[in-house]
Length: 223
Figure 1: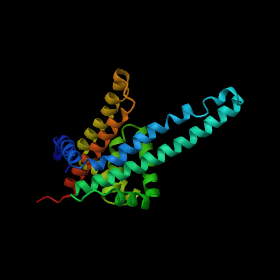
Figure 2 (figure 1 turned 60 degrees about the horizontal axis):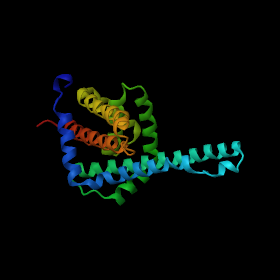
Figure 3 (figure 1 turned 45 degrees about the horizontal axis):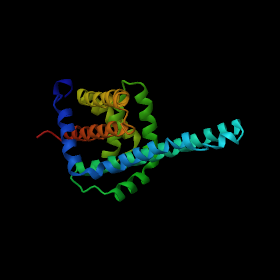
Figure 4 (figure 1 turned 120 degrees about the horizontal axis):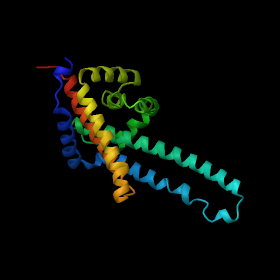
C-alpha cells in the first residue's frame, strides 16, 4: 500500500460530507466560532484602552501599560481560541462517529487533556513554520483527538498515515492553505469583512472532518 493505493477522490468526498454534517449539526461549529469572535473583539481592547489618558499620563507609563495589556489580551485570546477549537474538534469527532455532540462533555474532555493539547499545538506550530510538514501537523492534531492518545503516539501514527495516504493529506493541507490565501488577505482587501477569519476557521474544521473520514477508512481493515 502506498502512492498506488491513494484514492484521489477521498479529500473532496470528505469535504462534501463535512458540509452535510455541519449543516445538520451546526452546534459543532459554535465553540470554535464563538472563540474566534470573542478573540477578534478582544483584539480591539488594546487599541481603545487608556484612550483619553494619553493627555494626562506620562507617555512611557502609557506605553508600558499598553504593552502589558497587549500581553494579557494575547494570552487570553490564544488560550480561549485554542480551548474552544478543540471543543469543536471533539464535537466533530462525535458527529463523525454518529454520537450526539455535547458542548459540556467536550469541554470537560478538553479540560482533562489541556496539557497534552498545548504540547501538541506547540509541536504542530513548529511543523507549520516549515510549510512542508503541514500535512503531518494536521494529521497529528486530528489523530490526537480521534484516537484519544498522547502526543508521541499521535505523531507516530500520523507519520504512518502520511506515508500510506500522502496525496490525501497533502491535498487537504493545500485546501487549508488556499483558504488562507484566498479568504484571508485577498478577500479582506476587496470587501474588508472584520470577521473574515471565521471563513478560514470553518474551512479548517471541514478539513479536520475530512481527515477523520480518510483516517477512519485507512484504519478500517480491508474486507
